[in-house]
Image (cartoon, rainbow, N blue to C red; front, side):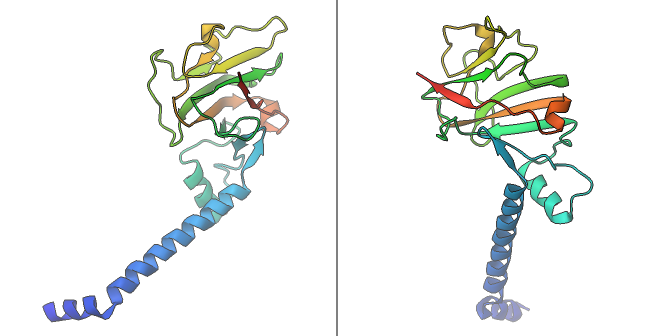
Length: 200
C-alpha cells in the first residue's frame, strides 16, 4: 500500500489534482464576481444589488449575489447600499472629513428605520472614543434651517451637532446604508442616496 501512495505522490497525480482544484476555484470566483458586478447598480458612488434574494434568480445569479451579500433580505424588505469613495471618486479615508447632505424631505423613506454605519474596508466595526457605530433615524438628528440634514463623517468630534456625527476609522473605510421596509421611492428605483462630499 505504501508503494501505491509513493507512486501516486511521485506521478504528479496529486499535484495535478491540487492545481486543477485551485484553478477551478479561482475561475469560479472570477465568474461569480463578474455576475455580481453586472447586477450591481451604482449611483452617486453608492452601490446596491436590487435582485438579492429574489426567487426568480437563476442558480448562477443566486450564487454570485450570495457571495457578494451573504444572508440579506430581498430589496423590498431591506435595501442596502455601500460606498468606499467620495463624490470625486477618491477612496474614503479617516485622514479626511466628509459630509453626507440630505436635502429637505430626502432622508431615506421607510416604514421601519434606516441606519448608516462606518466600518473598515473588510466590513468590521472599529471602536472609537464616542462608542458610536452608526447614526439612524432615532439618533435625534438636528436639521438645518431649510429642513435639510448634514451628517458629519470624521474620526474627531466636529463643531456641529453631536447627534449628526458618525465617527469613522482612522484609515481607509467604507459606509453602509441600510433601510428596512423601504418606501415606494426606494423600491421603484426613484430614490438616490446623496454623494459623500469631502469637506476642508
